[in-house]
Image 1 (cartoon, rainbow, N blue to C red):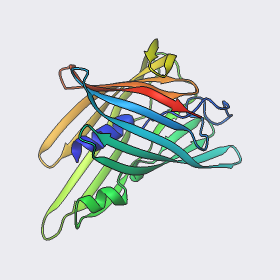
Image 2: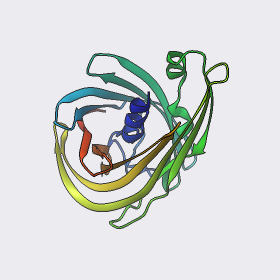
Image 3: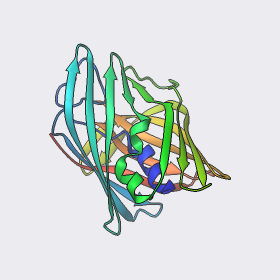
Length: 230
């Protein structure tokens, strides 16, 4: 479950289409029916599975836009997990609701578990520039697993910054990207782990590449945009 959560945290910046650079979002245009496929790879470049996204329920209210991002995560054994995520574009910032990371399907797979989820949203401004520092985000999950068994998980996304600009080649095309560095710090029971990562973000497309590393900076895995349609 922890590995799945980390994959979701790293890949939640899923891309949307370049159909109209609306006034609300430069990097995440929200368009009904947009479809995106990311392929996950292990540290040796072997395929580990795919993440497929579909954008639905796009609604506008003045300068604000909201949408539902339907995600299907399929691992290398063919096992799949479905999730729905909420995104809101408010003025100059896109926000992703951390509470929606824990959906009913994940809860049902964990049995009789009660969860209390709180935290702050991930924010991405439209006006990115090299050297820019981005706001941290966090999520706290309190689980009651029956009887006297309780488990708390704290996930922080910290040290977010725009490192540079770089061109990236993918099966879906070549994109001019900003490279955003961040660290995902997870505290679960007696375990504390920090996973650095980098995301390549293209205007009008969103995430086109992502890499995650261990505490020593060695590559653990990556994701690449392999298909998209609008």
